[in-house]
Image 1: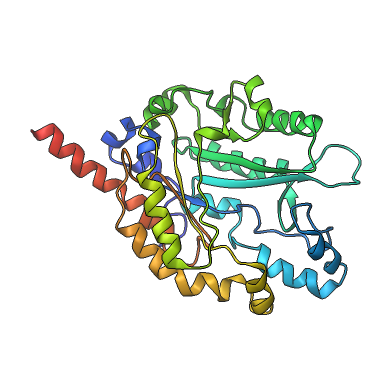
Image 2: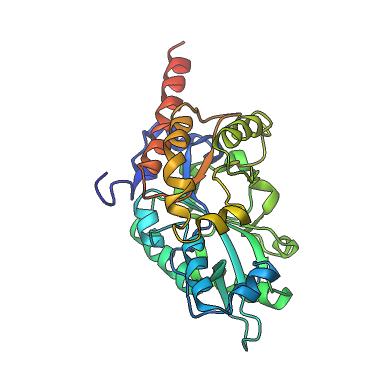
Length: 316
């Protein structure tokens, strides 16, 4: 895949697809986005178990934790250029730090949220027909004041690009282009109710298999797709294998990339290739290590199947 060849994939879709609800399109996403930059010098994040926090005082353990925390090798800009349009986000304050600064987090602390939002906004300004989903689904060490600070930063970063809450089926690419909107924010915290540009978390269900077994994962993805609501929500298929604590202990030195992911990505990718978007079909599909295989291009190509169905309907 030529670098950046998926940077404008939404704007390059066949015109008929721009009138399909985004909830019916196949859209590539990344899991634990923003873990591409992890600060080894930072304290261990509040999402870690107490036992690991104690261990983390030993610098070797921090280096090993970094290996397990970095699930995406690409920066935000690189993921966007590669076609990723959904980002799974975990954020936190730094306990003990003065002020209300918020950071992306996965294991160790990552970059300031503001810096990430700026990077996204630059891309969107340069690619006005692309739309993204930011799913703020885990918050750590944050009170209401932290949330208000973060929500104001989101508004400041994207301004009129933010898509206000709407019936899910109304949101098509055509709808967004006409309004010059590009960003849908899903916010899994009650304060979303006070801001029209925040969508509730229950509009973006993302069932999690929590397994290291690829066969169990694929069965779970099939089952949860079958249970998907026909109307009123988007849907995330998390094509992700989750390391257990004992898996981490056994493979600490090799790291996540060389164990679970390398071995199982071909099977996961083959599952993706057999899917179809549309009502009760796949919508957003997330994976670890989006750069290892042509993951985004495989997901995007599924949208051609919608076109075939559309042609059949218009001819009859």
